[in-house]
Amino acid sequence: MENKTFYNEILIEHNQHPLHKHKLPDATLALEGVNPSCGDDIVLQLKLEGDKVVDGAFEGSGCAISQASADIMLDLIIGKTKTEALHLVDIFLRMIQGKATEEELEELEEAGVLSDISHMPARVKCAVLGWHTLEEMLTG
Ligand code: ZN
Image (tube, rainbow, N blue to C red; front, side, top):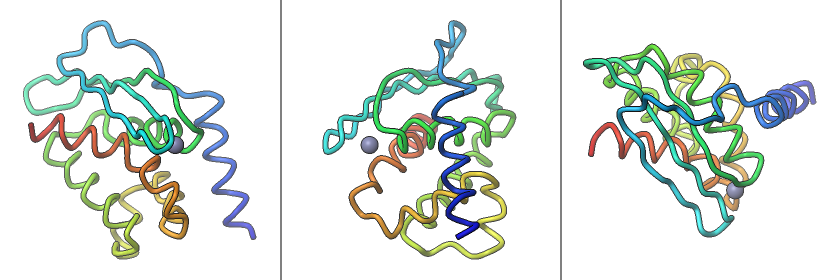
């Protein structure tokens, strides 16, 4: 029960006060990610310096889970290298399938609260939208 409350509070906080939901004027990369099954539509923007993600933001609209997940993801990956960010994406996507270890979940920090989504198949695409978009940006 405590876990449930915690999970909701973090999602609500990121949904109501997203730190990273704005335009990033000096972005070096931008990519749109769409989840038609829910109507989520985001544009992820990153500023890369060499191999490092020095800043990031997103714009768009969608359900609480898609928006909160994108905000939580940006919190986690700003300041990381591309390799580190892709490593975290990999853990997140496996967590959503229920396949990440306890140690790996710790690396995800707040994003670990979204592990409950693995039991809500209809919301999985919402939760992974930002992360899939990030993966495409950094590998494409
Ligand atoms: Zn959604």
